[in-house]
Image (spheres, rainbow, N blue to C red):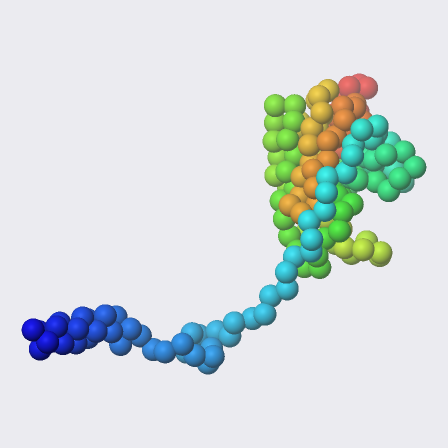
Length: 184
């Protein structure tokens, strides 16, 4: 009886060690894996969504730029028309801290539309913020041209409620060259 139990135990141990016998041992040597494991820095701590109650759109540095935020405070978002004709585009700036070299998708949702705009961290002379462009002729810009609220979200930068206003619709219409067509 002792011999059969001993034999059973040896066979069991041999079978259990087979899968690990074929694999190399754990090692700190990265060269066997083809590339070194790089140390990664963690992303910045996510921020809370700002309070958009009472936030408004107003004309920025020029007629071709509008900013959104609480009166007397730093802006949350800006839209600017750049270029003209078929090459015209809207530059969207989300004034929220961004990590250097980071990229994300800014999600705009509202007015029965949605848009996902690639944004990158951009140095504005004081801080890294989110900025990207989209063609002024893109149909999904209708997300901010309607008369209902919309939201703008960048991962880690919170969600902004964009209160209804005709200002984004007017800026986009002007950028598309539609205002000049209406005047004719």
